[in-house]
Image (cartoon, rainbow, N blue to C red):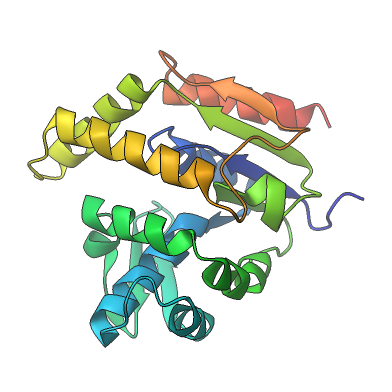
Length: 224
């Protein structure tokens, strides 16, 4: 059964470019956008703010269900993320927050708590959902499933450039270690591990421009 409104699921490891591509595809199609990783990052931030341990699954699940969050975007796709009414956009994108979110995302209780919240983003005219288990777990009947990947070296270089452009001082070696650690945690977790859906189309973005990857995804969507 194909979901209606339609869903395009874009999964992949950290630094593969899935967030950028998902946003471009959503813009081109006029679809809504779900950045599922932001929900786990926001859960980690809220837990720190409230003094909740990042390994307390039950407490984190209760917190995740009741998160007061808002995504404010404009036509230029400049987006602010608000948690409990406060702008946490910069904190959400910090490397340390990503590492904490990866730990939180490995907890079954948290993933269960956020499942229906993610599915609620499915609204007309359609949704582009990016994450690590969109096609395998959250939207298993998505119209199009894409697993976007790239070499670990390429992903580290991309992330390094992004952070430098934002004025953050992080070494390439540290980023490479972080990406390898995150890949291992995401792939080995017991619930909804990072892997391509059986019917996903694999797209290796190594050496490809953003425009080329976006166009390939749009071509695959147009085939259906």
